[in-house]
Image (cartoon, rainbow, N blue to C red; front, side, top):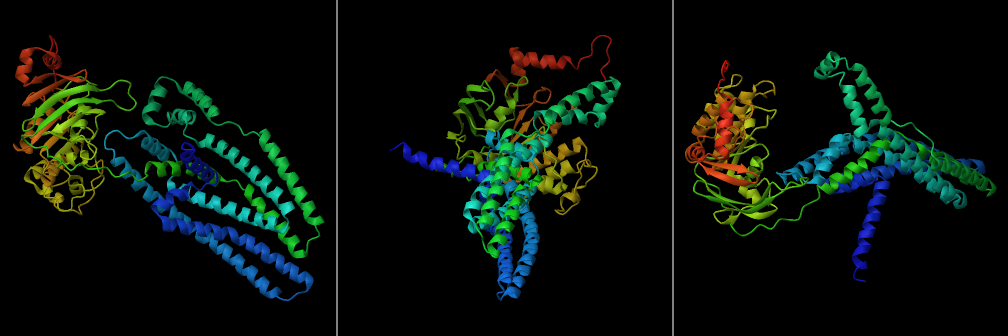
Length: 598
């Protein structure tokens, strides 16, 4: 008994979920959570639009029945029929307009909810959320899916509700017809959806065909195909992929059986209906309902889009479900600042899809207030270590402490991140003004007008410091600034954030990977002056020319801190750091008979 109790609600929930997916009602589950009033209105409109044809059939039956019996009230019934016809046309127009606005609103709310869900996990994206993002990006816009779902449900309602009129007029004739028509309609929709999805899907075969076809239209790839005379080979591979991705339509045995059953049920229903000797009104209503029920076989691309919408809406609803509140410890979150002691205490971390951990029981301690550099070979875990430090990732086990407080705890990581400003290799180029690129929504930013920030931006050719003082300044196109100029904007953004939010630690994750060694050394020297003496810089670089000036260097190797010290002491020890430094330095020394340019 104790085991069956919890299972019954879960079983009912699964049944409701499957029924909702089958009936294409998943959109309303998502809509009810984000825009409940609008969702209720669209449901009522669909029911109203689906009921009008049935009401018209009943009115027609009474009109003809009254005319046959010579009864009065024909004029009133006729006027009611005309009114219903006009209401039907007006309702269809209104539903189209409202459905489009509903879809737009649902798309906007869904995108905002997905953004919020993604920002709740600033490190590694949870797999369920990543699957949702992939599904949404590979599908038509949510707005289009919502409009198609409304049209699909409206068409089905306009067929099924008149079918209920047929059941009311003659149950013996109506029930077999209604059931067989629904079964045939479901099979038709399934086969049509499978056919169209195969033809326009983004699965592996379709993606391969699209990629091979695109080789001929991309300038870079087309040039290589022409040079190597590979056109015939590309075309043959495209044909193979395209043929495998688009199977031919075929009539299956279940579909043929459902068709025979539907035709037999319709013949049986008509025989029963005529032999029941109904009155003129019942006969007209029965035949009209049967004709209207045939609308259920209407198969358009709305069937495909609404089926796609079921998957998209369910995934978005699940991925954006409200999260239980995180309990925040009563301990005050310390701020990382010069003099703070950061300690990694037996930290273990492994990425979700990785077979081996990046770190296992990693322990070390550093004191802020000096420039700190982290070096190591590619894949040593330098960037991962930075993300753990600033709270973008959480350790699988172990703790990260600042002055004795566990800042890696779930309730503290968000506040702990406020201690850091960040500048990485892939800095963002926001398509907006220079001011907004630096301020990032801080309307009364003091840091934007800081002399150090203005000094950085004063060297932009396209924009002067006066542009920075104008929040409404013209938008900077992505191609309007060079890569070096965008780097200055990103650096200004990091410095402005340090001023506005009193962030005392500047984290640099290989921001100079695209620069040569001399430009990198100049960048770090300039950045050290700009950051100021009351700030700490923590940098990661795979090149040693820029980090040799750091007050302390940590050498990361095989998931552990193997060496630490200044450049001079590490070179004197002759360990991994010294070998890597000399290996890089040798690349810039001319060999016999060679001339180094630049």
